[in-house]
Image (tube, rainbow, N blue to C red):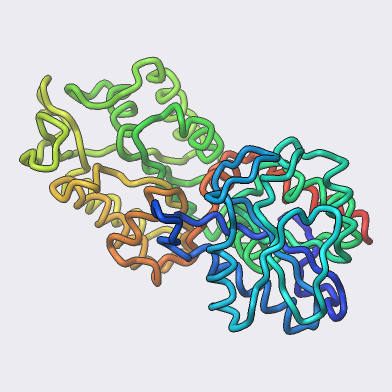
Length: 396
């Protein structure tokens, strides 16, 4: 597991603490916040620093602003208002903060959208040094941006006197480490989605680590066709059939397994009112489209999930947005929730499925990281985590 300094290990009393949070929340046309999950998830780090008597500065990106050009819709003002409600104290929003911030111990300010600063995206050294001068302790608590090397996620960590991981980032890294670096066996990955190409590097990385790999959605169709089975007009990537065969034989060679569906739910057209028909895979007609796994496959997958020690879940196994083709994703989700395994789930569609079926309480860890979660699964180093590890190594 990557070694890093945790915020809980750093004395914060009287210190100027700069927290890079992920407060990038969805908003409606009027700018009202429609889901404050990320703000609520970021408050433990802020409270911890305030209770310790630190002078607290928090910043985040919001949307995709143009550097150096302020527009009202790019402002963190709605976030500041929500933070002050959650913290029960005023949270002042500070613009043009790079050259200096006034904040007293025991108080908190929100620094305006960090992506408005010229050089943020390109990880400008000059900007990073100016930001590092604002604080005694830098805290990265934004796992969702850990796969990007930007001035507030990477550069500042190089120059700050102390650089550490906040509770949210630390929890995410602990959970991912437990799932992939010291997993309870059997280790099962459920990787689904419409395209093999977007998940290919993840499949390759996981195929070398897991005991079993369940593929679902359009990815499964590509594997079925690679195994010589009919898939009709289903979504499939013909240029990746050899790749699917290679992954299957590589898994088999090391005693791992990529089980394929034995029955599927098909329709003739992609529509919410399309009748759902269950068929054996061998009986899929030329004009059929596979939209979900069938009941026999559900039972087989549920048994594999029940026997697992660790489950990593990314992606729905069918078109769960249409109720007629949602049974497979719901059953897989419920099996993961009911299993005794340590389970970690991530990715936008996966989170939507978890919310749809109310499984939040029963998944061991839900990753909010999106792209960072996927890059971790791919085995790629995350720049924001790598710099914290580098600082921890040189601190001792």
